[in-house]
Length: 71
Image 1 (cartoon, rainbow, N blue to C red):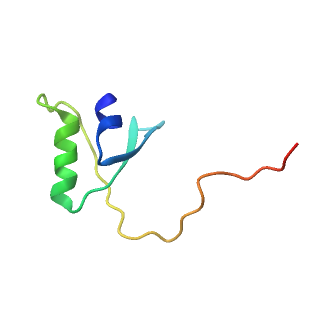
Image 2: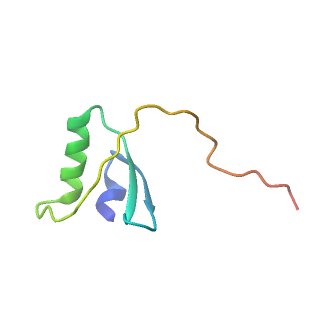
């Protein structure tokens, strides 16, 4: 976990329910950069299984908070 938090290419890490344990949001200049991040996170033992999904376009984004009324 510390490797993910320290890595400059990892922007977000979410613990999820389902087939996967974590979803990471990473940023890289190209696919080779994505492979480099995965190699860095796997380390020398390479025993981590991964599945990669590439975002082709963003249809919309909403702010990361929900506004509430003051008490």
